[in-house]
Length: 281
Image (tube, rainbow, N blue to C red; front, side, top):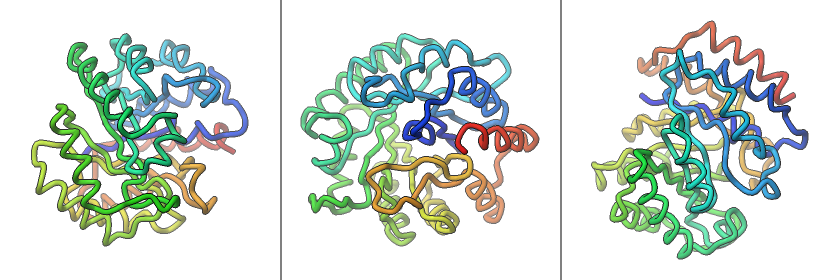
């Protein structure tokens, strides 16, 4: 089981700027927990996401000597990917490719066709530099714009990505619209259809919904899950302000309930939980 902690996703929408040193302190605490991956920052326009304008400085302050956790940086275009692959300590480059044309334009200021062209470039960059591209299929369970959506459309996107060499694909419940039934059905089909691909789940939920959504993903065979401590963050496009990331503590408890506990440093996790209050509240 691979658990990705997503402080970048949790922080990026905050109204107040989290000071660089506070970010570094929080991320260093998270690096001691034992997560498989840390979604720590993004190389995007500071005008678009001002919270992440200090990602390079934050990266320079991270203590990576006593951690096995891999670093993931989000990018919005090839230029951002060129920045990310230049850092030896970054293993994963993440890109949001939307199933919704409207959201692709709003999120990255490009069409789906343009985004696929950039995915090709980013995949080549990653292959040349020994990085791994993670493609998030935003609006992977529907959208609020009346754009076309179906599980078959998600499958078509996944097929196109595999032809480009992408090996990690994460359908994302961007606005929290999925049901456990839809989660299990989509992931079960994708995993059976593309056995060479590692499918991750980046899901959003209202309070109390996380355990059922996690169980549905597990039952479908998902072994890569994204979360954020206390469920902070989520997409500002979600109609419900209570919709946020899956709380990491709820994921951990659900895994334990399903006898799939992962090896985490509980003391370090509690320290990170305590520090999160100062970052987000």
